[in-house]
Image 1 (cartoon, rainbow, N blue to C red):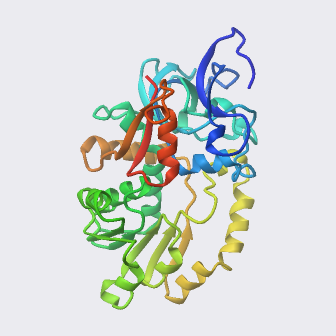
Image 2 (image 1 turned 180 degrees about the vertical axis):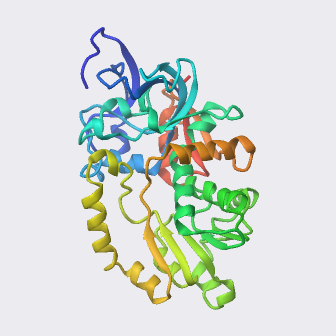
Image 3 (image 1 turned 60 degrees about the horizontal axis):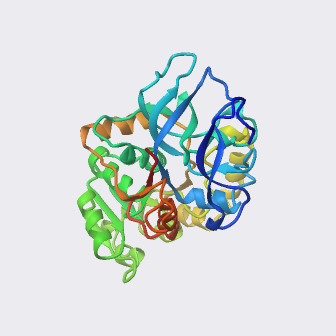
Length: 366
C-alpha cells in the first residue's frame, strides 16, 4: 500500500499477513489513489458487511485464487455509502447513495488492490458493480445484500426454478439462505419451500421469510424425511451447507441440484484473468465428483455455482427490495469506531465467523 501523494489517510480494518481472525487490526492507511478514474468511484463508506469468504481470504485459503496486491489489505467487499469522488464518465455523481460488491476488474491485474476493500472509511468501486441504494433501506441494510442476494438470485436462475415448483434450501437462517427463501417464495413463486434450521429463533425466522416447512437438522436428516416418497421430493435443491450428495436422494427425476459449498468460492474469476482455465479444470473434475455421479444416477443435474459480477442482478435485487418482495435480514450492527471486543467491529467478525449468525453481520462506519 503506497502513501497518498498529499499524505491523506483513513482508518481501515485489515490484515498484514494471512492467518487467524486475530490478525485483523484497525490501522491508519492511505486514502484511495492510483486507480483509473474513468470507470471507478470513491465511496465514503457508511456500512460494510462480513461474509464467510472473508474468513477464507484472511486465512490464506484463497491466496492462489484471490491474491492481494500488498499488505496491509482491507478486508470485506460488501459496501453501502455515498459517492465521494465520481467517475470521469459521469455514470455516478458526488453525493449519490449507492451500494455495491467490490469485484475487481481486468485493469487491476492479477492481484486485488488494497483500495477494493470495504471495511474502511473510503473504498474504490468499479462503476459496473455499483447500483443506487434503495431509498427504503438504511445503509446498514443495503450493505448486507450484495453477495448473499446475488448468490441466491444467480443460483435460483441457474437451477431453472419455475412457478409452482418445490425447492429444498439448506441453511435457511444463514445469509444466503435467508435471501434464497424469500426469492424462491415471493419472486420465483415456488409452490413449496422447505429449509433446514435449528428449532427456536432460526426456525421462526425462516417461517416468517416464506418457508413452508423447516426441518431441524439437529434431530432429523432431510434425506430420511423426504427420500422415501417420489411425491415428497424436490424439483430443485439448493445446497449452502455442503450436503449436495445427500440431496441426490431427495431430488426429483429430471430435477436440479446447485451447491455453493464444499469448494473455494472463486468470486473474482474475471479479475484474475483465469476464468477459462479454471472452469475447464473444474468441468474435468466435476465428472469425477461423487456428488455429480449420484445426481446423474437419479437423472438429475448437479452444478457448483461461482458468484459472478452482475450490475443487472444487483439492480434486480434493488427493485425487489424497494417493492417489499424481499427484505434484508441482519443479525446485528456493530460500531466501526468502538474498540470494545463485544460491541465494536471485533464483535461483528466474531459473530459472523462463528457460523451462528441469523442473517448478516454489519459494521456501521458513519
